[in-house]
Amino acid sequence: MDLLKLAVLCAACLTPVALLRKKTPEQALLLTAAIVAVVLVRCLSAAAPLLDKLRSLFERAGVETVYVTVLLRTVAAALVTRFCADLCKDGGSQALATAVETAGAVAALVIALPLLEAVVGLLLGYFA
Image (cartoon, rainbow, N blue to C red):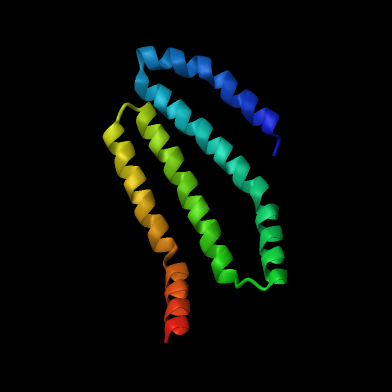
């Protein structure tokens, strides 16, 4: 991934988005969503080798892969939540942004449930 190219792409779209926002805010939001999608796809494709490397490092350290998966899924949920909430705010709907953020928090708790179960199991085993 070339960070400079993505930064230039985002900066180049600032002017058209600002101009569209004055006349047709719907098109400005669509252009913003398209640029965000392009950036996300490029970031995900660049992150794939990094994720494989992280998994191998955690495996060598003896950390169970389920915990690594939980960690990565939680980070992904947080990023998706942030991007979606920001798009809602750009579209002028603070209420939708708040709903997306709430859904993201609930999703993070659901994703992290295996970790919570493991911690409770350790605590119960320690005090029993």
